[in-house]
Image (cartoon, rainbow, N blue to C red):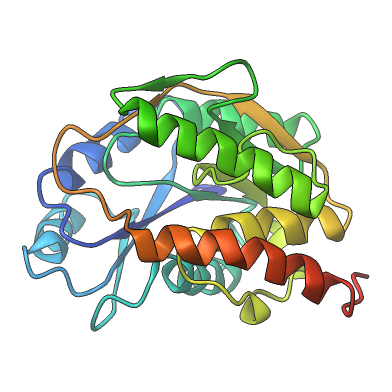
Length: 241
């Protein structure tokens, strides 16, 4: 049994899923893993089921259809909160854009006093590998835009590699989180800050996937762009206590 749970949403990640699972279980700290698979037609869930015979700390939740990144994480958060042993709950991608070794750094940041630790691409310069310049600029200026509109001082507002202390997810009314795409990542950070939690950015190097297909789309970007304004307006009419 571990005090740490890594939640990994998947959709068509057969090229990466076994490797990422084995890598996490090889780390010096023992992490449990929860895969949330949205009905991957490529057999991702079948690979996870095979690995469950080898790793008792590997868990799988299957959903029918592609229901969105945000709903996958909320499903995972609720699953984790039903199990009191998890003190640290992580978000992580399956495609090795997040280095599994950095899970230990994020957990340590929470042990050192953070309520939310973000694996940040931009807190110390721009630490992104293999992205085209257009996407680097889009991501970097998106975080600037979020800071301008919301007032939160987070350099990497769209980051999807995070560690939450359990009390954060117990306090935030996660059933009221509205966005399901990448705006979900912004909304969770914004809400944590509004509730007064200490958010710390831990520098990481982000490496774009080498296998599988990116899930980014113009629809997801559009949701994030307009969602930031909506979040700010909603916050004027909401109490955080």
